[in-house]
Length: 68
Image 1 (spheres, rainbow, N blue to C red):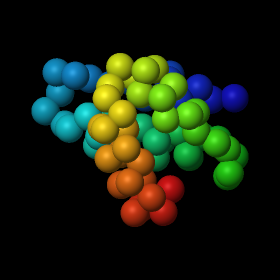
Image 2 (tube, one colour):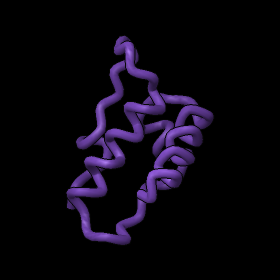
Image 3 (spheres, rainbow, N blue to C red):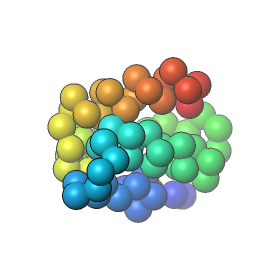
Image 4 (spheres, rainbow, N blue to C red):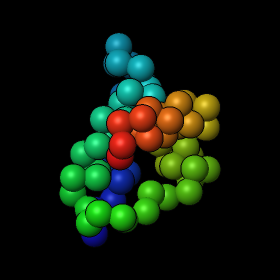
């Protein structure tokens, strides 16, 4: 099974906002796993990516708007 932490590497030096990097990574992850595969819990994802829960929540909201 695909590991989201391997699919998505956050670049804190990038000019791309962190939440958008997460959105792009979640999109890639969703293409690689079966439909309906769960994401890890919010706290685990934030810790695993080394980002704030606020950034993660912003990314999740964007993913929901995109229908992911």
